[in-house]
Every structure is written in structure tokens, then in C-alpha cells.
Length: 411
Image (tube, rainbow, N blue to C red):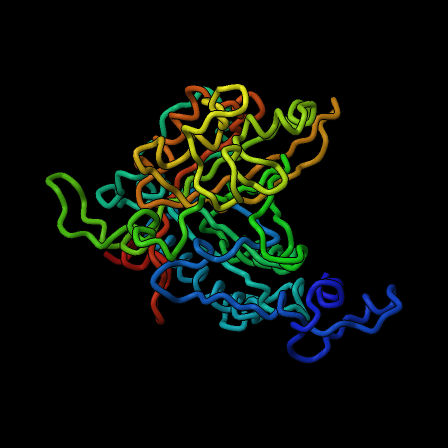
């Protein structure tokens, strides 16, 4: 993969010395390629916010939830978060797992660079019961309401702890997944795990919004870090003072809430539609992502513009119209999904869709109002099914010498 990226997609971007890709050289006529920018890019572990939130989409990802084991409580959880934080810092820097004393490395990612690896950690609602920290549980972890498109599998939903892993190389991402699982030791066991992917950086002639498995550009209307209100929409502010009966949430300052949904796309039904019909369902052109009211991908939707037939150019039940902030009281969330494909069912139906991950300062002012609106009449609803769900409070980034969640677990 590194060889292909270096030779075909990163001309003029080659950095570092040639890698030792002997297996690659034995099966391809050209000489081994140098480690390209796709492998050398490094994300920072320490900072105000955890990595993996505003980090550009990565090509490969894993979402995994853990439950603390019987008898494990706050002490064991703190030790686990300390191990995972040390491990994340090592791996994101391109070091072998265990160089800081966290255990032996498997060698899966030998020869690869950091490849934009990120590890992001969050706590589920039940984590606070298991650790005796019920009084510190934030209201943002209250259960989500039920939606009509829900067909949720409890075994693949929620969890005490949640880890998001992303990288631009599949072996680097799997290496991190395996290392996280091994480092859990006897403190926690995997509850569920899902694998995802996006287009590899450099696969297009210029940077583009990602496409999902329906072929649609996905994320056009995302809030942008340059927006004046980005931080207030996406990150939890430092508490100015707690209301009566509300626990202080200083441990969550600089953090965010991740709503995670496994959304199956009913691709056989979707692909029977003409492109024009698909565009009316979404409200945007399939090729460019431009709104049906005209312009380019980044042109604001004109929700009042009529089409040639006198009806709204963007149909009243189009997904883009219903989910737009202007139709939801300004509710906004940062979408950062992965696509998934878990094989073909016996009847020939693909088990494929979207590992939807969205970030917001408050899920009840971000995800929930938008999903409620979609639930009442989204033209896309007949073509999707929500099969798993979870909400996780993701603490702010760890400072040097700290581990993720330390302000909560040592409060």
C-alpha cells in the first residue's frame, strides 16, 4: 500500500529514505518506493482536544467498545486509561507498542510511519455506575430517544468505554486496535467492534469531500474550524458554575460528545433509482455535490427557489433540506464517519453502510433535534436502517504527564 501510494499518488511529495519493502519488490517490477507523505504524517496526542475529532478523515478505522470486567472499578479504570494513554502517545509517534513499558509489540506495523494514526477515548453512561462516579455523570449521556428507523442490536450498542482508531494505512490501524485490546488486560473486555474505511488520501487529483457507499458526497455542510462559533458548537466549554443539582463537569472541558450509529444502507433498493431520483432524495447533485437550487458544492442552498415544474427545486422532504442547520434552529454537528462493508448476506444483500460518528458540545442540541426532524419525513429513510447506537463523553486532550480522563478519575 505504501509503495502504491508513493509511486502513483505522491509524486513530488516523497519524504525520507527508501523503505525496506522486500516483499513488494519481489512482486512488482519497479524499485521499492520511498516512504511517502501518506506514511510520514503524524498527529499529536497531547493538546487541548483529543485527536481524531478535527483530524482529516483517515483511510482506515476501527470503532471498539469495552465493558469493565466484574470486580473492576475506578482504580482499575484509572490504571487502564493510563496504559492506553501511554500506548496512544507511542503509536501515534510511530513507535512500537511497548517502547514505553506497555507490553511487547506484535510487529504488525513494522516499516510503516505514523500514517496519521489517532486514538480517541470516551466514556459511556454505564462507566459512571461501574466506577462509583454517578455524581459526575453529565446530562449529555442521558439515553437517546427512540427513532422510527431504529432496529438496534443491544449487543452492538453503548458500552462502558469507547475507542476510535483511525489511520491512513490499514496495517497501522489494525496494529493499534490489537495493541489497545492487549493493553486492556483483565480490566476490560470487548463489547463490540466495527471496521471502517474512507478513500485513501491522494486517490483523487485534488482534496475532495468524501463519498459514502451511496456515491454521495458526505460532509459538505460540516462546521469548519475557521467558523467563529465552531468551538462552542463542537467542544464542551469550561463550566462557569453548576446549576443546582447539576454536577460540575470541569473534567469534560475541551472535550466533546460522540454519537455513534451503525447505519445500514439498503443499497439494492437505492441502486434501482435513477440518478435524478437519487438527487431528489438527497437534494444535491451526485457528481458535484451542488444543491439542486444551483451553484457549486459550497453554494448555500436556496430553499425557496422553484424548479422548472414550479415545485421547490430542493424537494420538501430532501435529506439536505431537512438536516440543514437553518431548518433545525441552528443545530449543528461535525460528521466524521467511516464506511463499512461486512460481507454479503445469504440472500445476496450487502451488509454495508455508514459508521456514523458525529461530534457536538451537547447531543441534545446537536444530533437529537436533527434526527427527530429526519425521523418525521426524510426521503432517505426508506433506504437506511439504524442497527446500533451509542453516546460517549470524550474528555479534553491530555496535557504532558497526564492520561486521558485523569481529571475525572482522580477527582
